[in-house]
Image (spheres, rainbow, N blue to C red):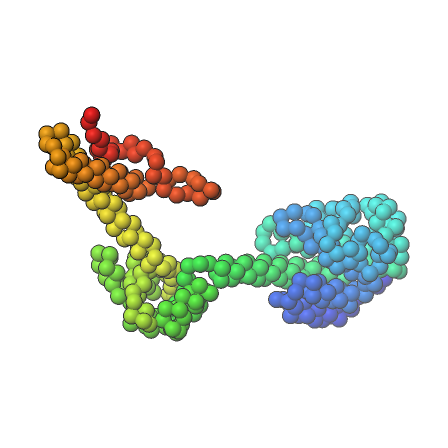
Length: 402
């Protein structure tokens, strides 16, 4: 075969490069289709197949099968691992295009591959190498002819040049696909978060709000404010804060901040928020990401628990003192019963019996305020028969002597 038209080949290469570059950003399979068509047009190949490497390995996954393979051939099944061959591994190892003019008679091609491509006479394997000094493997491209082909060195150089450009485009598109997948995952996490999450722009405008934020704001303010300035009128210094700090304002100024804020809702009630805000710096502009949690119910629960604890302690002290008084009444009642006769003795005995019953009731009350529980019928309930065993009380039912 004579020398090709160098000028024509160069123009064809430039045109093919432009077409491949224009496919950047599209679906990876679409990019591979574009590359296949351009290689077919550049060197007149009858079949072109592209296989993408698993990142960081030499394992190739079939993305676009070769139309020259026999029906049912594993080389035509997308998603399968490409069968290795010495023809392919040598091209990968040398990082150069490898041409087999006599494909069927080449010892580097296994018999199984020859059987899968019975019409192929000449074949070319071109490694697709990524950018950078390490020349990581992006994939391998095969161009096949059904008649004997004798490639000129200029044609090999043109194919390698187009393959290098295609490798960059494929690498870029894979990164775009990974970025899209990561963005979708982050969006899912952002929307699923139960905390209020806001992204506020450098000028104070509200850029993003997750589902929890939109629901909370609509519920308590009646609408979703469009800017940070609109939020300010609802904020009040937290009653538990040591100082009035502008948490979100500090983040927009470039400093992370954490604290509590009170927000007055549309109906005039206060909601307590624990807020953390951090700056997001990009291109010299500072935005802020704000994460807030409504701790109103938590605070109320803590306050209620504190009040209940105080009430229980007071009740224990009072019941202890009352039991001591009842002990005196029982004792004096018993003494009077033995010292007097007639109606006075009967009255003393009734006083004594009433004090004993009051003591028993008090004893049950003391068990209640100690929250002694027992399981009954699969549910927990107060055990009024349990022994208190409480060291801080003498509250056992008083008994008569004799």
